[in-house]
Length: 188
Image (cartoon, rainbow, N blue to C red; front, side):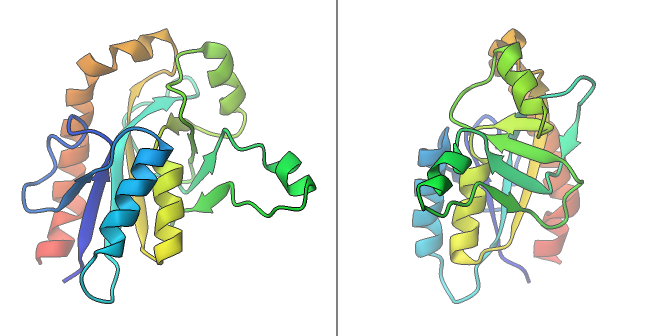
């Protein structure tokens, strides 16, 4: 039986996670999510790390994107990698995620509501969130397998401010996916 840890930024996004799956509410943003997941994995019992399933909402960076997404890679859109590497430091600004759908998730501590920023990010990514990269980084450090599942809640523009009214639908979709795809793996 495979061990699983569901990681979500907020209780609202995790509202429909099946009750028999362990959930870590990590908080909003890269620092909070990295800190919470590091503490959880450092205390994880046994030698085998759980499958970490990061569920949550994301903004669509391109027109017409809706529904559930399973990013194949995640990048830190706030990291100025080229300049820092030019100073002689090695950085990791992107992680590959197995079993993805080919999409790219951009992560930053900015809640994207500006269409100009959205359009800049859309050049290299499909979705934007505030935790995925940090979760991927911690999983890489602990050699924990990772899946990222995001539900599009907004178009990363001024309508993103209606997130509180839209999160319940995202939570329902994420919970349904977990019931159908993860719960059976864990329980059976």
